[in-house]
Length: 352
Ligand SMILES: Nc1ncnc2c1ncn2[C@@H]1O[C@H](COP(=O)(O)OP(=O)(O)OP(=O)(O)O)[C@@H](O)[C@H]1O
Image (cartoon, rainbow, N blue to C red; front, side):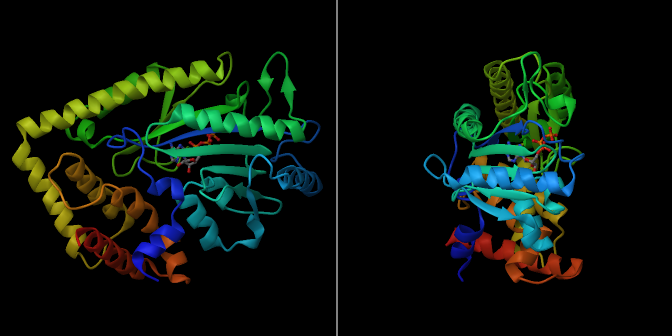
């Protein structure tokens, strides 16, 4: 299979499409946490109760008039397949651990995914490329209405939707943007910005969500509070803060270009050179260098590479994905060699 075909087959279709403001915002996500009345939350449910949840959601999804979602039972997938699903953000790291009566249903373009028996009975998410939080919310809201017409969700007049973790009670909604902030980092402004963001009721997380580190200057920014605010207020706040972040990031990129153009160009071209010629590469190094190349593309310093290589390669070169492509378990050193080879090939593909 050619590399182009492999990319088209393996990556979510939404990832391959360009999105608004994508020089800073890589993707937008809105997810809802829902539980079925009368059945304990997953951490307290017996296997029989977990099965009931699975079966009820499976039955609801059989009606394909509104949403055509394909359900996969995670216990039928290998560890490599589950990890690869996590690496493209279709399921969370916790769900990727697998287990009985855990599933995920997703749309063909993988914009929509519904996790069954994760932290809550249902975690429904919509992912879009670029800055499109409102669009993601509109779709997840339609999905919620559809699910609610089939299932009886635990809801309190006083608190709103009831969830396994109190931090999600109320709307059960987390809206987030994944932002690429190399300019703020290079200008040593990142800490200041992150502190400002937390004061505005938002949380900053790493690329793979809760408890994960920021890599490659990528940060996930989401709402902290779900109680006492409407969905629209939460989205509005996230949108306003994200607009400010975009403005700041662009400002610092231009400042760097004005004040430290030679140093910046040297750094970007060295990273590009390593990616083009290295024989072995860890995923941590790859993400760091790819972030530099993406900045180089956005600033017009690198001209013949498509911006999309960044988001494509950070997924394809993760340990799970590399092993999925090769269809076998690889030792860390073997992975480093395959990773470097895949990156070289992808970057040359874009030049021709
Ligand atoms: N804007 C985004 N773009 C791409 N992926 C995202 C985005 N926001 C979150 N994700 C992915 O979704 C997964 C879950 O993220 P996270 O743990 O932050 O949220 P959650 O599980 O919905 O929330 P909670 O902590 O309340 O359980 C992670 O793999 C994360 O990378």
